[in-house]
Amino acid sequence: MSMFSKWLEQQSVEQPEGELHYEALVESDRLDDEELMDQLGHDVARNYLNPNELALVFDDLGSSEVADYLRANKFPADIKVRHGDFGEIVTAGLYRRIRRWCVPILKLRYKQTPNQAVQGTDVLAFRFRQTPPVIAVPEVKTRATRKRALGTEAYNSLEKVLGRLDESLHFALVRCAERNHQFLVRHLAALLRQPQERVVERHMVFVHDAVVWNDDVVALLAEAVTQRTELTVVKISGLQDFVARVYQAAETGAGPRGTETSKDTAA
Picture: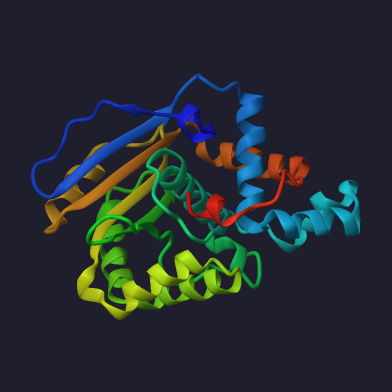
């Protein structure tokens, strides 16, 4: 069982009428806090650096200086950007580790500066072996405070992203080609060549402070949705403090834990 499967569990929810399907995930008690911070911290670090790069950083700097290096060169200092990055990390982990989609790239590795927001889709997830192949395009929002219009804002953002989906697919293809992941390159190229031979699913993931969450966000979104859309809300208590502790764990506990393979990123 993956760390994400131990950390998060389904919460019973009432389904809205219409085209919106709603799922809520809440924290379980299957991991103690120290273990959770250690494992989430490691996952945060690997979203910004691949294991080979991290190993080189350790060899060059020594472990005592790695935290300073990550803080200065990799992890965003801007709280809004950091929260957004964390939401994307949780979403990628959810799709890879729990739902078993293929997530071929970890987009945060391609930032030029820590506080930059990488353009394109937040996360791309695939089921290449289905006929026709399926692409999930999750729009991710991370919020520590309540905003009733969150859902409709996400819906509008998702529509814009879907209009430029081929740009994101090409970005993923180039990154996979750079790593010589030929299986992924072939399948991504086929999706670009034959857009009529693919199914695109609309997804949203809200990583939200559990204390201030209210299902009226779902009700308002359900009124706006006109096509089948999958909504997942990940509820975390004290989200702002939680994210700060995870990044602190990532700074102090980062370290190479083996070599990443194409199977790791295409799980």
